[in-house]
Length: 240
Image: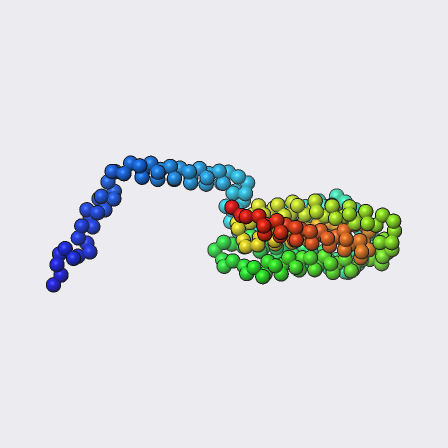
């Protein structure tokens, strides 16, 4: 037989009433203050642009990014003169298509739903390596009429100008992908790779000085600087 005092229900109701009793005003004040602070932080985050974008659904974020990318691509394509007919080779078209594919893949990686398992880190690293490799390969596919461009005086200055323009063009892409990122592992590295490829897309489509040396120094260097530079910044900058 079991003694009544040994029953686990013995005194449970009385204990619950003690916990619910309003005899701890200090604890209640602390709890109220804690919840007020949490609510204030959540409200501030929701009112920011980043908080609003990250609170959207995965489909909405992806459609938004694709729409912005398409708008930027159309604006850049029609606002500036494209390379001449002699430069529009099959290799040139393949380079542009590969850049677009890499940008879309990076977008899908950054906007991956949070309820799915996180992507392995090696996939993000491979994405960054593929972005740099694609820009290097594209540099070895210049059109024949531009082969002599690297021997002309001022070719180094032209490469520096392209590199600066490419870096500026990649910044909006990087900022947009970071805006919709909910905290993916190495998401900053993937966004940097997409930014470098986006800069190379515009340069490949519009730069009339397309010698191999020029493209390596002025075009491919953009992707390398984005990946290595921003990768190191986020590697040694503690996250909140």
